[in-house]
Length: 233
Image (cartoon, rainbow, N blue to C red; front, side, top):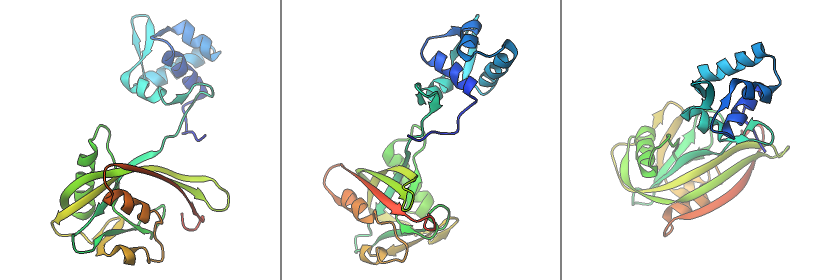
């Protein structure tokens, strides 16, 4: 199990107490931490200042932001669990045998070739995220459809340590319009045949699976573990 860097353990205990009850008094929260009043008051104020906890009458309760944060807590260990990153993966077909290939020119995986990708924003519909990222990453618009979901787990080839955990919403685009941005900060784009893309020196092996999802009928799902050396990552 992987965890994020968390708040002070006393703050996690306060959040846990409020996660499991509608509200709690100062005394009840302090009892959950076993801290002196001064130390406890300091940590409670910290949670109020960051907007996770609010005082209502003589009790304290989680704010909306506090509920969202604390809901990711492993309550057995009082830690916030890490979750997979959610992104769109874009396969854009020009109708003449070529797709948009992208070389990654930023860390991690510097120099690797794959497809344009981008993070999905909070509350953003999937196809809207695909259209936005396509325009930002390539300068293009296209007719988009949902192809499927791809869970890509990257581990260190030597140690087995988890490097990346990503879920891609695979989006297939046809009838592209606009002029392709070839070079931008962090990446290089070009129209390329899939068989030429997979022959690049450094290429993500997931292209075959993503292609199958993008061009298949309906909405599919795939999951795969890939191994990389420390130098590749």
